[in-house]
Length: 101
Image (cartoon, rainbow, N blue to C red; front, side, top):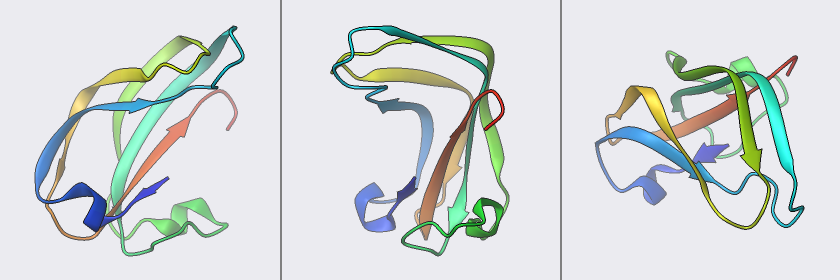
């Protein structure tokens, strides 16, 4: 996902991310090799070759060999192992990978 500079509002250290895992299913989902990366981009929407979307270094900020989310309409919050410093300029990519993705 791309988060626009105008949505972020300025320089900050990001130490957690929150999202709705799979709204409304009422089931648990497990993910192997769960990774979260962050990095800068000048794009406002993602292209088809994901690695080409980054305009700078892509940093791994979270890894867990096994993650389980309960799928409802509540937010899932993940505390990052490595906080990410956003300098307040440009857009930000938040990339979540798991398993063979």
